[in-house]
Length: 189
Image: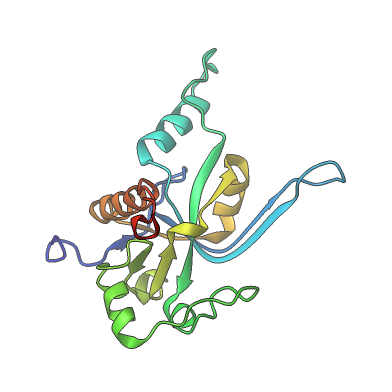
């Protein structure tokens, strides 16, 4: 792949906006309050932004135009993020304290590390210089968070970003996982 061209799959961006592939640490997403609204709270040790970067860029540019534009068709209200679990916790099935999760043996973990057999998961290698331990994303656990909540959280929780060439693989795996079609079991007919 491109690993010989790039020292790390991660890099720190000094951009004012959220980008696809941004990695957050200790991200608290709290949505809704009061007795008549649905309250959702997610406290994620690590999370990765999955929303397409072109949409994030257009949203940011549109909202920061002067004078303010009349049309706001480029604005997005929510941003898609996926929890990223530390590999050791994930392999032991201890990555979600409130659920009984699968325990993975070393052979299965090797396949997950290779981003091979299990399309549900995506492995991100460690780069401690950029503050990233070994992580596994579980595409069944994605969240859409209000744009304002993530921009506020970015100030205190942003760690680093996945380099552009590695974002495509992540995006393709996520889209492939979501676009699968469950076929009926033909053996019972």
